[in-house]
Image (tube, rainbow, N blue to C red):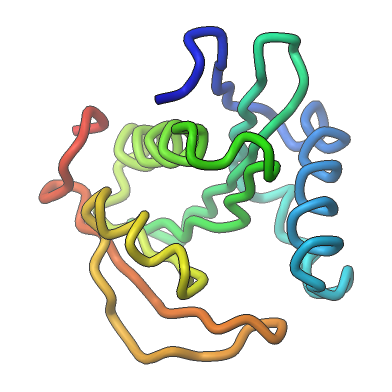
Length: 154
């Protein structure tokens, strides 16, 4: 479970950019070796972002949601290493799914890194395709129909 003092906020890209960049650079570029030009795909300004903060007001996790008609693409979910397995990722995901539902999106899809598939399955996502390579990391497409999803965002 996350710390009671942890919070998740919906942030505008222009306000959250420094914190979002810090987290994604740490997790994706440094830890996982994703090339910067692939990580910074130019879509951030047109997506919604959430940030998780620890009890000291430091950013510890982020994720984004891009609307595509009546469906949403979830991505760039990242939690700093020392905060993993403490409910931060789940809190970020729930905030993004709540936003998707509030915006009238019926389906959410994502490309999960293979080791994270079980995490998304626990939240109701289902594998919807074969494994593929993205930036040298194996991924698998997953989808969620919000009206069939478990959790408090319904």
